[in-house]
Length: 284
Image 1 (cartoon, rainbow, N blue to C red):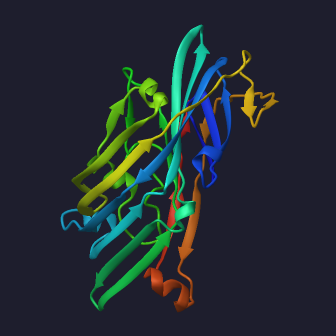
Image 2 (image 1 turned 135 degrees about the vertical axis):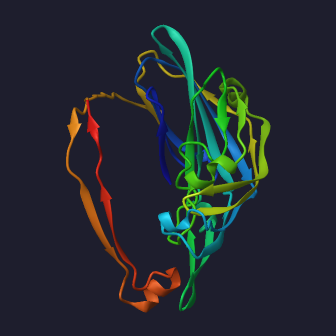
Image 3 (image 1 turned 90 degrees about the horizontal axis):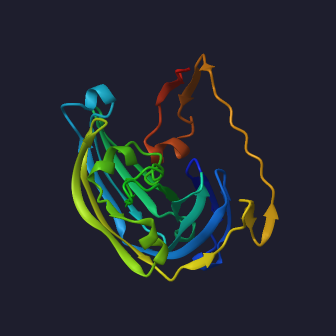
């Protein structure tokens, strides 16, 4: 898996091998010299289970009536936490990233959704390989660690109708700690809990048994000019920023299910069609 995460100041890219300690990484700091880099291997255990059905009060407006389903995401075995310290305007600042990979577990996400119609009921079953990661930006000296945090939006992505990560995020636990504590590793972050949600025409329950066990950190030092560091080689990097003054127009996409029942039936998509329109409104 190739993962790319970062704040406005720091970009961390990692290529995760089956063993997290073998990851190859590249770090760039755009606002100042890199002072230190801590790489903490992580073991993840547990799962995230979501059960839901349509909310009679709101499902019609969202086009999600008659649905009931469940999905389960099983945590991959490994991951990485990066914590970097750098100089910005002569002040020391920290930023970090947490990266998960689902590749080693094949298809860690399984979804099953039943749809009731006037003519009976139909079933969608899907499996997907999903990985995710989150930026760890300090606020008041602490970062929020949780699977509902920004950057984790694709964790529940699949081809069946159902809640998105944004729909269930408010029901997931969040643990707050300092980046300095994360950089020291050797601790366990427990994210177990249960909560309810109501969003997007659906209502349901999320149950988490997830736990993150941080191992012994590996520490590396950057150079004084903020060059990119990758596999022991220096690569000079230039960054250019542009201000977008205005965006006009829209993009329309017409969608239709495959005519082959062997392809559309397992996803309960036969006969479905629709249009997606993206109309960004940017003006400065």
